[in-house]
Length: 133
Image (tube, rainbow, N blue to C red; front, side, top):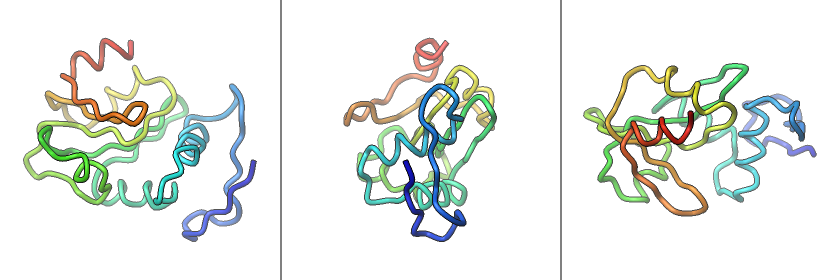
C-alpha cells in the first residue's frame, strides 16, 4: 500500500509494509492511517516533536506528551498542547513492544491516558505497566 505524504516532511511516497516484518514505525503509520484522522501521520509526528516526545527504536514507536489527567478529550486530542506541570503521559500512538516504551520516557508520571477503540482511558501508570508486560 502506498500513501502519498502531502506535508512534504517525508520525501516521496510513504510506503508501508504489512505483516510481521513491518517495523514499529511502519505499524504506527498504518494504524494512524486506518483511523481516518484529519491530521496526517507526518503532522502528528511533527507536532509531537515540538510539544512532546517521538520515541523510536527497532522495538517500539511512541508519540506522547506530558499533560494533565483532568484535561478534556478535546485538549488531549490537540497534539500541540502540553503541560508545564504534568501529572499524566498522554500516549497518542504506540506500536511495537509496549513493555519497552516505559523505560524510554524521560521521567515518570502517576497517570497515563490513551484512546482505545474510540474511548478515552486514564489509568494509574503502574496499571498500564502491568498491562503491557
